[in-house]
Image (cartoon, rainbow, N blue to C red; front, side, top):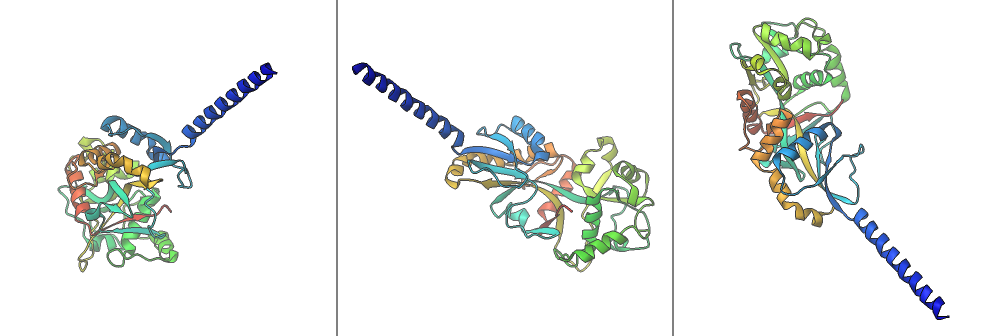
Length: 318
């Protein structure tokens, strides 16, 4: 009888130990853990940034789910260009006062890819009447029409009724895109040109102007772009405030707020101008911080345009 009692005790001890082990495993698997959730298209670059910038705490990195909803057992920061919650669902998303605030709805701006009008330094800046002219004129407006992002960027500039005021209905956008290449506003073949076709025109034609994101110009060899200068897209004469089109890289907090409070050194690191300069140089963008560095003269001009803009706008994926 004592043997059975001892055996039962042994079984009970083993069962209790198994429960403790299982509970420990479940705790470590399900406990909230800090993580970077990164847009799939930026995971490689973000990995390089973490390797070269030495953040104060090592967080694991995972892909942001396609639905944008983070796992419940995680907390940390989402690294994305899709924008923070609260941005209005419209063809154009507008962020007023972003340059001075540095954040929107709790999300920190890390870096920007501003769209600028590029030209050879010997050429004049393009006039508003030239970009509005449906029958062409002096010089060449260069558009790689196969890139729909460029088409929508031009369309948005033409449809901007007042600073930061764009049509909300789809019809004006569709009509403007449909008729954009029906006149002699752009170079011959504009609708069928890709970037490989369009870029050489910027170096060979005079005068010539190209509206493009800064990152696209920084992809080119330095010897090809050393003579280029950048300006804002020309505003109308009666406008007294100016916006800037840009793609934006955000750090968006998510998860348990009390847990995330332990990451205060991480948010300080994200807001540091050296960190943002490293992020910008990895992406070929510009840092959001006012004290961030400039890669070259064109980047410096783009930074001044960003810092002097009363609002920033971004086109939704179309």
